[in-house]
Image (cartoon, rainbow, N blue to C red; front, side, top):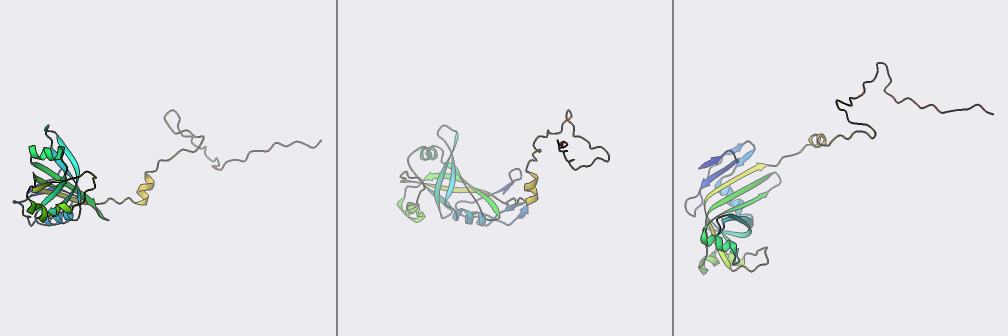
Length: 208
């Protein structure tokens, strides 16, 4: 079990296609360490993620995908193209899913083998044929991501107080005034001088 303190992200290795039980860790630096079972619950509660693969040219690529969870694996529908070709040449991938609730943000990353599914029995059992894709492109190919490790993090949302928000509002100088600077220092009122603006005298003339 590895922990990356620099990313505030914990990672567990998964033996085969089963789910490890995981252990609770509590909070550290406002980051909640989730168990593996909690991670799978979050993944099963969503249906959209990002599949990262190694392209045919050796460069990384990433695709938004709809997915379904079955038997400790994630199933994805795909049209013929770069995603399917990439997983044929490099049958590995990482699936990232994230979301939020009223009090926190969370992210889960599954890494493992990414392979085409060919048997009708597995396709039917996974229910991938009934998965509705957000993309209008016809998708009659199926991929299975079998995770060997899972990393995750969840952290509380930052709440901005009214005082903090007010302190971020820039102070605008009054019209006609110049900002203070070494060349233009603020005027210092004379001792005993009234701070109130003195009335302007009105010109008057004697009657004719």
